[in-house]
Length: 185
Image (cartoon, rainbow, N blue to C red):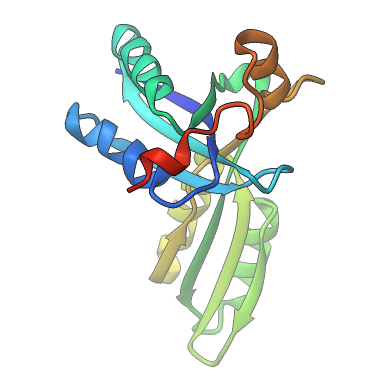
């Protein structure tokens, strides 16, 4: 199976996340990563969904996603033409090794954001692979707790996802696609 990153513009309204997640659940597909946040338009949110699927299944999922009333646009984010990043925060034991941990974090573009007598919290932003390597290196200090965000991605071009959606479908905002009031309850 191949890993695919979908960027999905949706109406910023209650219940949208549940409808999108249930679409994957009903079909037996696992979501590897899911990040949702605001866009430049307060009426639109952007979901970044990472899945392991074969090509035909990806086409089916995309078609089913687009049928959801709150979905405005969908774009696959290929690593060759997009920037993809995650955030990692990890609490490790600090037993006289703060300087080593700080140096290690800096090698991966991270930093120590909190420390006390028994632990330090390292924060780093990077690709999934970079963060996995950092985490493997930090394990020797004793990982006490870790949290990692879902992947987010943005296409490396002058065209935005909203502009591409407008060009391809004529839908670029929730105003032109809104059927939400009737569908939500």
